[in-house]
Every structure is written in structure tokens, then in C-alpha cells.
Image (cartoon, rainbow, N blue to C red; front, side, top):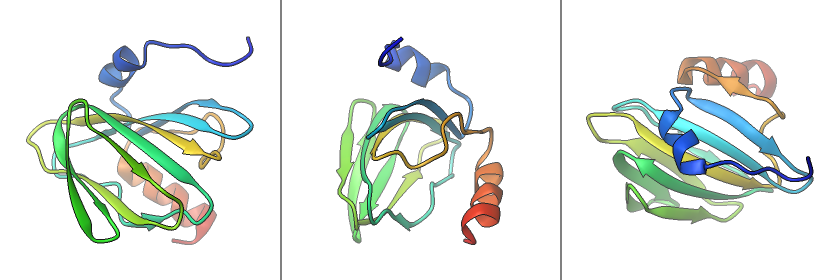
Length: 128
């Protein structure tokens, strides 16, 4: 099938994995993520990737080059390449979101059940 189609709200709300790559195209990638209460993605900067994030459940905040933006259901944030950023779940339950990277950020088919698993992968493959 060329392209990809899914009910992204249902998929995002049903996701319990820290990170799951759903689709990787030649110039973009669709990923669902769930941050547990108090969890964060971690401070990062993508030099060659733009990123779009939309929250479907939970609350927290994004920090873009030191500026804080509140996140809750329905809020989207766009992170241009070169922007230092982090996403933090400051709520008492899971924060579920989907994100688009342009171009792709993770190997096609990536599935990290927990943040610890994702951090270990990064340490082994990217030396951070």
C-alpha cells in the first residue's frame, strides 16, 4: 500500500510504549509515544530534522530553547531543526502523543517499550 492510513487518535490513546514508529517515508516519519507520570523525553536538539508533536492525553510542557509551552489534549507544538527541546509529563497519568519527524529520526520499525530501553539504544548507537 502506498502511504499509510490509521485512526491516529485511537492508536495514540491505545499506545503504552514509550516509542513506536508507525510509518517511515522517504522524507518523514510518524511515531506514537507515551510518557509516564514525571517522565520526560530528555533535552535534545535535531540539527537536520523538524518535528511536530500533538498531545492526545495528559498534561505537561515542552521547552523550546528555554521557553516553556503548556501541553494538554489537543495542543500541538512545532520544533524547527536546531532548536534545543524537551517534553515533560508533569501530570499524574500518562501523556500520550504522536510526532512527525521530517526527515525520519529513528530506524523504521523501532519499538521501545520504556524510556530506559530507548536511552540504552541511544547510548549503544549514538554514544549519548
